[in-house]
Image (cartoon, rainbow, N blue to C red; front, side, top):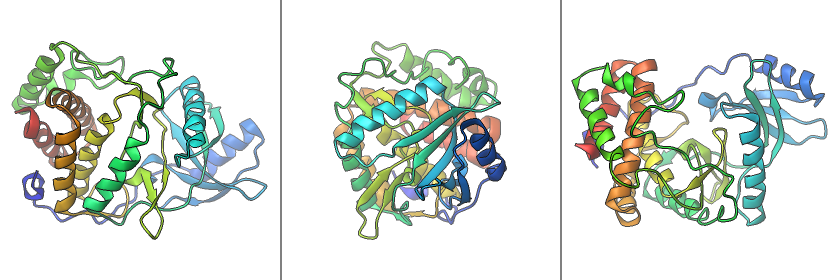
Length: 310
């Protein structure tokens, strides 16, 4: 895929996102748990998810975030990550999980060293792929961990909603018809026993100065079980976002990143599965783009879908 086929806009330069009132969130968590956390600062990266740096009374650094998942799912995720850590995989320990007054869940995770890449090239893609390969077979003994549903035939309980694409325009309706056709095929859901990161993006893989991976963070949607290669398709959405200058993190994207990821997915993911995963990503990204983003973002993800679904 050529960068010029995605957009003619400049490469991403970085923007900050609203994270609400961080002091109030810290105070609520302290009130519920008597943790005496100290607010340090809003994270320079991960701001789109509302990441807040905090410090425990004993001096340990942590990252406070909200999760859209349930309390039980995040407790399960914490347990899964303990197992991954025991195998030397650099994922964060979850030190505190608490349900807030509004029903959402707050997490205080271990703050791992490193930062996201300043620029994404073929080497970064190689590192992300190699790190993702370490998740292979990690959940063979954990059938309790759910496989993420793809919702290709019909809407999920809350999202992504098919009617959003149905009502938008002719292009979105054509893509929805194609997504449903793929959903009507046999074996239209993910399978597998790998650990699946729910949001495997540039901002969620940390590196040191020598470009060694020091952390895979932000499991706030809950650890999934299935095919680890699904996460590689998620990287494409980050590539597309970055070209508009509206994503998270301070990075730019080189054409070599697109080229390398194309090579990787074509060698690692069979065409039927790649089509299925692409259909899900198209549905998910278009749903949110139509509801919450300006027309240029909607157009970007219409092109995202059309690039492989036709």
